[in-house]
Image (cartoon, rainbow, N blue to C red; front, side, top):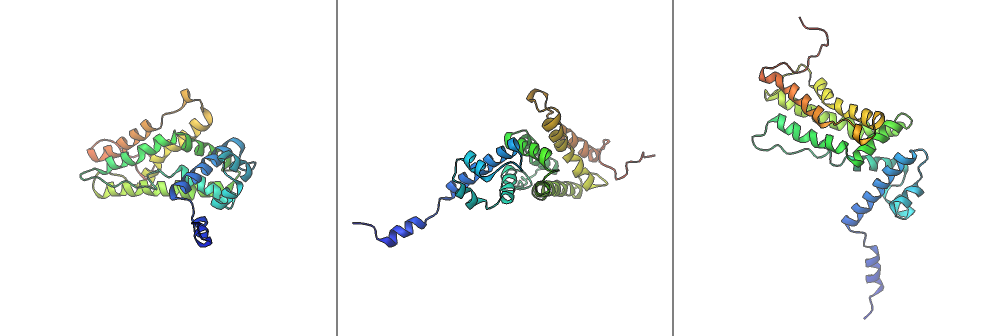
Length: 228
C-alpha cells in the first residue's frame, strides 16, 4: 500500500529534531568563530563559513540570516556555560564566598579553553574596528557577568561575610584578572608555555576581599587617597 500524498506531505514538513538543530547551530557558530579569528570579520564571508561548517549556504542563512546575527550567535555560544548565563543554585549551608568561588573559577578556567580563548582573541583584534562586536560583547558578556558578581558580593555584604565601601569596585577588581589574561595571553604571550594562569589571581583576590570580615587587612575603599 502506497502512502497518500497527504501523508507524504506531512512527512516532508516535519523539521529536524532538536538535537540535530542544536548540532547544526553548534557546527555553524564554531566554524564562524574560527573563520573570524583566522580571516577577520571584514574578510569573512557567509559562503566560506558555510563551507567550513560543512553545511549548505541556504542552511546557514536559515539559522543566521545575516552576519550580525551570526556574530551574536557566536558570542552566545562561546558564553553559554558562563556563570552569568547559568547562575548556580546555592547549596544548603554554603557561604557566599564558596558560591562565588564555585561560580567564577570555572569561568576563568574556560577562558583558557579553545572557544573562550578564541573569543577573547577576536575581541582584542577586532572590537575597535567593528563597533557591533564591542556592543554585543558588552551586552552579552561584560554587563551580565559584572552584574552577577556584584549581586553575589552584595549578598555577602548583607550576610556579614564581606566588608567593602564599594561593591561595584570590588566586582570590577574581581574582573581584572580576566582582562589581564586576555591582554597578556592573547597578545603579549600567546605561546602556551608563557601564558599567565588566571585562576590563582582570582583565588587570591577573593581571599583578600573576604579577609576584612575576618579581622584582617582587606576589602576595598572608595577613596584611593592614603588613609590617616
